Image 1 (cartoon, rainbow, N blue to C red):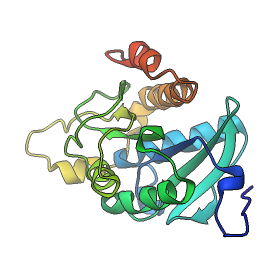
Image 2 (cartoon, rainbow, N blue to C red; image 1 turned 180 degrees about the vertical axis):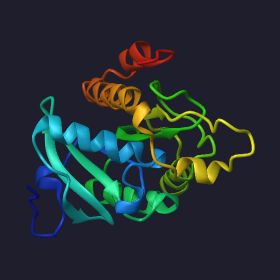
Image 3 (cartoon, helix red, strand yellow; image 1 turned 90 degrees about the vertical axis):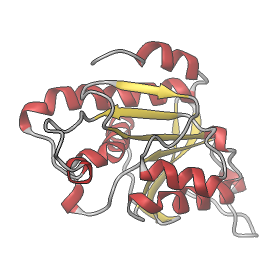
Amino acid sequence: MFFWNKKGRGELNSPEYIIVGLGNPGTRYENTRHNCGFMALDLLAEQEGFKIKKLKFKSLCALETINNVKCFLMKPTTFMNLSGEAVRAAMDFYKIKIENVIVIFDDYALPLGSVKIRRSGSDGGHNGIKSIILQAGSDNFPRIKIGIDRPSHPDFPLKDWVLSPFKKAEGEKLEASLAGAVEATRLIIKGGVDKAMNDFNGQSK
């Protein structure tokens, strides 16, 4: 539940972390590779027993406690390329430092079934991350990358690949990597970025 003070701001119940799952809104994109961030956040919410359904900051969002830490979870509805607008609005409202913004997203450079953690870094060609860096003015935020594989054919357009749906045969690896991303999120929330990196980097689930 949100609580507001007389100035209309949320300091009375402000979160310590913002957790962002990246994706595109609408049923058309629900099972596509580019929506792994949404999928991971939905899995986390399901495990914790709540839904991400409030509308605020151009996002579907929820303010919940995870591992005894107050967190603001958000799925930007701006479409991928403008994700940073939603993230920046939430950061400004809650006065959250960029270091406490955890972003979960897809990475075609990683094999399906893998999860990789980074403390900071460049956008790597990902438009959602590029938008967040631009709006926040910093790339110093932890991110959880979910591998989605590269196209099987070198001439397959990357834009079409990331917007393509997962195949039934890929379901087991996808489920394992989403579960890994959720576990890594919990580790980071507890102050364990290094542990999350040690546990997941270089592993295939």
